[in-house]
Length: 141
Ligand code: THU
Image (tube, rainbow, N blue to C red; front, side, top):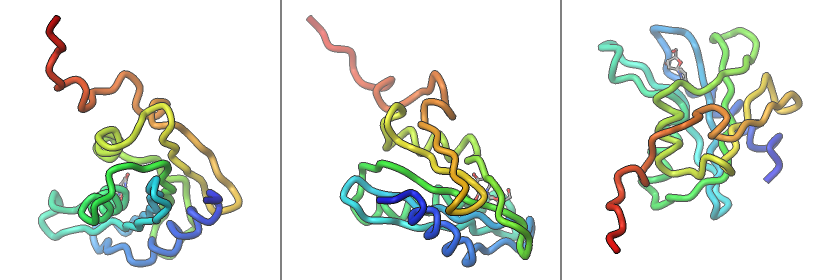
């Protein structure tokens, strides 16, 4: 899928962000290896910590529908009513990506709009990471 189209989906879903506390709206569009797009926005909460980021909303939607393999995510942010801005994923979201995505091939598409994209691999944004294989039992010989 063209990353401009993936970013367009992130821009569109960002409109659904529920952000009465920060006023900062984020949209994410997650592309599964099966070719489907799962979209998420940030959803805040009066108790603050139950709030969830756009990227994790997209992952939770996708995984709960049975997806486990992903190729890319587009993310965009910005204050409500203001211009679209580059929105690098927070550390917790990067770690959630690490659970399901290959660090060397999964691509994170950032930018200020569909015509202004910057592409990073997960390993560029989360170097020397801890992942599922760290908990796998050692092979015995
Ligand atoms: N936010 C995201 O949705 N994704 C990120 O990766 C960074 C931050 C949200 C959380 C909160 O609702 C708002 O942006 C301000 O931090």
